[in-house]
Amino acid sequence: MELYFILTGLGFFLFLMAVTALIWMVRSGQMDDLDTPALRMLCDDEPTPKDPDEERPNERR
Image (tube, rainbow, N blue to C red; front, side):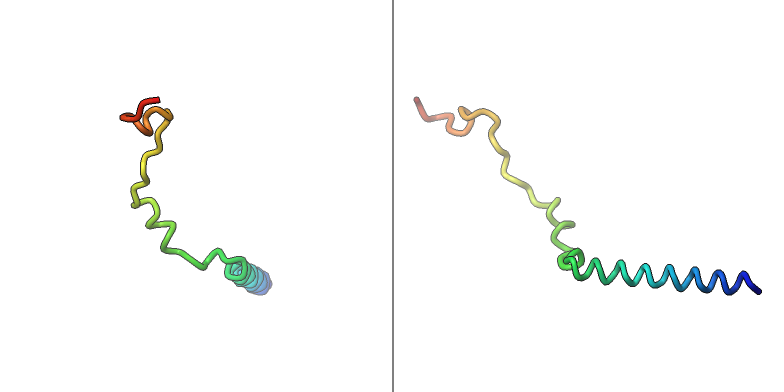
């Protein structure tokens, strides 16, 4: 019977910690935009030239 009291108390403590973590995440802005980071990997970025000469190949110096 004592085990039920210990497990109930432990479960209640874990529940309070989870609620506290959720409140902290919402207040710090971690739950604001959940869609954009997942879609960002689908967008193609423009390739950046490694050599400055590759940037303007037809232009003479």
